[in-house]
Length: 489
Image 1: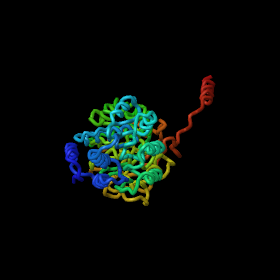
Image 2 (image 1 turned 60 degrees about the vertical axis):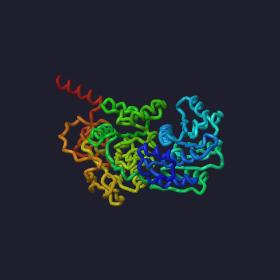
Image 3 (image 1 turned 90 degrees about the horizontal axis):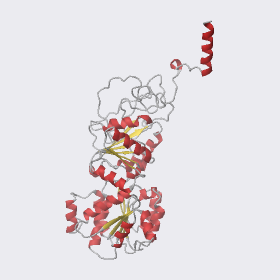
């Protein structure tokens, strides 16, 4: 299927290794070539960049006008650089030029590039508006506007900036909007800027079917050791590990590096140069573990990522979809592993409702979480939906036994945790997991049970005859010594 593209573009497509169009490309490219506005709703990793880049390049090659003629707006620097790299690859034989505009670096080189009148600008909203206010960018010749990852721009608070950018553009233009989800605010934006759009919707609320899902119950203090255990498995090739905060991401990357893993952090406190080197090092295979905050959850296309590991459960169900979209891309298989503590039940229920499946749980000997008095396990009981299968695809999810006990998830050979030989018993206090040591460092009377809602919590005291005698106070010990001396005369 050539879509009527020019020989120059088809040559670049062939050299890029594209053999057949992805679904969103097949449904989008013809409509864009006809000049229609398009609303594309699809999960990450589906080929959206080529879906808008190819028809834009075809249109610009066949016409003339005042440069820049195309504006692509992206929420993050990493996504802007990725779009630029793919656009340049496809524009190789067209003579068209594209530049990137984003903050975190000096503005002088970008101003110089703008004065050369590029055909396409790929920009983040903040820096673009700064340059426009300084009179350094003229958008009056733009004939096509692309808003990529529009929902993420809303999440980052860019909606007012987008409205200001729209005011700088000609009223007559083609508009293309791509988003993985469609919150109410984004729907209002589409109603405002899109005119009789062609809508392409590819299960945008669900993750790719090539991804296997698994929940790993674990105490908060045991997450790092469980992560190292997963990274040592033979099916591991490369992973993106997601945390909520940039400081913890940096510390975890340093810990993994000291442990012998080739790990690098990607978080907001890094300079743009550091972020680019981290991403490029991960792409090139110099690092096999990227420890990131949600700055890397959208639009980052890195081949052969075998695992996405949610070290921290994401804040929203949409964030879960975007994070795990970093694996299972381009119809490759991948694994999404989520570490779950007793505080994460409500979040897991929300994620399962959004993706319309029950995620299998996998317990690993010595690492399972416990928690007395915690809310009920959302994976237990009889009201759960059917799973899409072993590791998230094809079969009903395994349910724990009644009475609070748990069993290891039953699954086919390809599920997240392969069968393991029984480990030798460990002496107490040699490991904080399953050894009778609670999360606050105190030793319990018996080991914690390996389930979400059962067993002894991290700070609970043993009951009945197993309760330890309270320690004597300082004054009590002093009186005991005085009585002892008196008895000796």
